[in-house]
Each structure stands twice: as C-alpha cells, then as structure tokens.
Amino acid sequence: MTRKMSRLSVVALVLLGSITAVMAQQTQYDPASVSEGLKAIFRYGTSTRETADRLNANTVTVITGTIGGTYVQFGADLASVLDDGDNLRVLPIVGRGSVQSVADILFLKGVDIGIVRSDTLDYLEKKGYATNIKSQFTYITKLYNEEMHVVAPKTINSMAELNGKTVAVDLPNGGTFVTAAIVFERLGIKPNFAYIEQRVAFEKLRKGEIDAMIAVQGVPSRFTSQIKDEKMHLVPVDYAKPLQTDYLPATLSSDDYPNLIPKGEHVDTIAVPAVLAAYNWAPRTDRHRKVTRFVDALFTKIETFHHPPFHPKWKEVSLIASLPGWVRFQPAQEWLDRNKTAFSSAEFQRFLAERGQQVGVSVSAAAPKEKEALFRQFLEWQKQQLSPR
Image 1 (cartoon, rainbow, N blue to C red):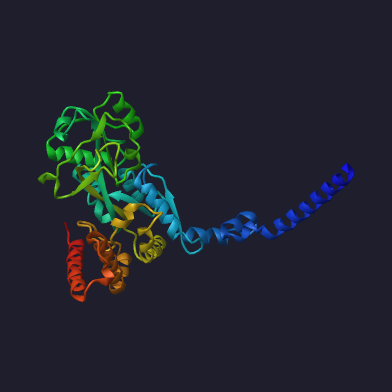
Image 2 (cartoon, rainbow, N blue to C red):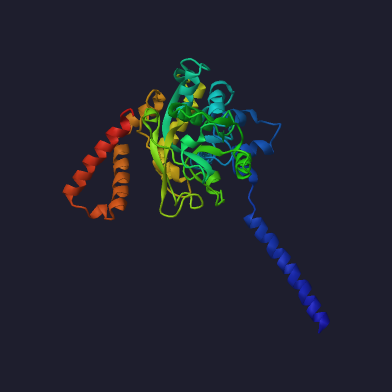
C-alpha cells in the first residue's frame, strides 16, 4: 500500500511539474517586447543609437519639489497619465523647492519644465537677485493654490505673537521661506527665521526649541496632516490688505486636519498659486517641440486628472485661468484657441456638475430657464478666471 502511494506521489509530482512547465511557457513573455528601452538593453552594444535618439527626443523632464510635498505628487500623476512610451515620456525629478526649481529651469541641462510658486520670481527681482526674470519664463498653466500652514503651540493665537520669535521656514532653496518672508514683511512682523527642513523643524518645535513652523503646501499637506500633538494647532493668517495684491483668501478645515483643528471649525489663511512653467524656448527648436508635445498631451487629457486616484488639488486646475505678469507658452495658448468651443463645453459641464452637488439637485433635470441662468453664471465665472487678479 505504501509503495503504491509512493508511486502515485511520484507520478503526481511529475505531472505537476509538466503542467507547471507548460503553464510557464504559456504565460512567459519576452521582456524586450514591452518597450523600445528594454529592447535596447537586451541588444546592448549592437544598434542602440537609434533607440537612444528616439527616447531622448520624446522625453520631457519635469522638476518637481521635495519628497512628501504636493509638487512631487503632481509630477507622479503627470507621468502616470501622459507617459505612453514611444510618443512621450514624462520624467519627474525630485527637486529642492521653488527657488531651486527656478534656477534648475534656467540653468540645469535637461530640465524642460518645472513647478514653481508665482511669488518666487517677484521676490527674486525685488531683492535684486535677478533682472526681468519673467521674460525668460513662460507658463503652461496655473495649477492650484497652495495654502500657508502655520503650526505652533496653542499658546500662540496670532501671527503678531510671532514677532521676535523663532520660526522655521524650511530650507532657503524652497518657496516656503519666500512666501513667509513676504507675508511677515508686509504685515510688519519681524520673527527670527530658522532655515530647517520640516521633519527636523517639527521635532524642534515639539521640544520647545523653536516657536512655530511654516509650510506652504496644497491642502491636504501630507506632512501637516501627520502631525499628532494635542499641544499644537494651526495659527490663522488674516487676509490683510497688504497681502491682497499677490495672495488669495483660503481656509483650512477640521476635515483637512482633524488633529489640529477642532471638529466643525476652520482656520483662515492665505494661498499662493503654483505654476507649471517652462523656459522661454525659441520656436522651432527641439526643446520647444518637446514642450509642445507635452502641452498637447496634458491639455487633451486634463479631465483624467480630476478623478481618483490623482491628487484632489487637480480639481482646482483650470487651463483657461490667466496668470498676471506672466506670458503663456504660445503653443498652449494656440491649443486653447483651437479648442475653445469644445473645451468651454467641457468646463461648463463640470461647472454644472459641481453646481448641482452644491445645491443638492440633479442638473440634468433642471428646467431650461434654470440651465440658462446657470450658463450666465458660468460665463461670469469664466470671465473672472480670464481677468488678472
């Protein structure tokens, strides 16, 4: 009986091995068939020049921001949606912040596009670090608004109370310190800045070695949302008149930061636009051609970014929004002009959907007069988007 069982076991193992081998043959794929890049790797040393030229010709690099920030997440989203291999490859690069990204776009070989903050170029010119710097840039689109987060112990309840205190404003090659410097200067508040990376800054704040820390990031800020300390809260930033020329009013809610804001409450703050910018490449150059290809892919697929799993801040992106003081990349403006009717219709449908959610009614069931009224409201909203602020 035992011998029979042993023989049966051997036969079963042989059959299992044969089946596994057959299945492996059926499911194995040639890795080199996945992409031209892999084909080049597998025939390395033979005829890779043509592949290398094609890959480089169709690759657009995007300088983003520091790890954990919204810029990095946007870069990953861009690569996920737009990268189709042969026609366009989007290569995000982890950056060091808005100030460094300005320098990288201007001077770093291979960087085509970057995400920067709108107040950074003005700051660099005002402080004498650059002259007429905006003429060297074009913008592809305004992205979203980045909110100012001021984290401090609950003993501090206003920005004015930070006068003479030590405030961490991230590293000096980022955009947070620029926004912080402008805001404090315009409000007449003079803190002592500490240029400390956010993770280190929070540890110092928790130990009482500094008095507050600032992060200017899109809501929800991944770093800020991870803060769990009952002694800490978010300090309000009033939308004072000196700030209104360059900044927008914003709020932070308990839904955004339940660990820092009591349930059902909100904290007022300000916001500054993030910009997808490019060097002002001359027409008919290779770099101009690559950025044009990127623009066409981004604008055509913009609706994809408005849905999960992509960052919720994509919902704020309106391609038609203007950016005062900046010149739009010409192929981007031409795309908008060519697709004005279809694009406006898509924007209107999105506006209707949002409006329907707000009022709790089905827009599709709305009466014609109601739709006409909504359309007039949309036109007014669109006019505001196109007008300088």
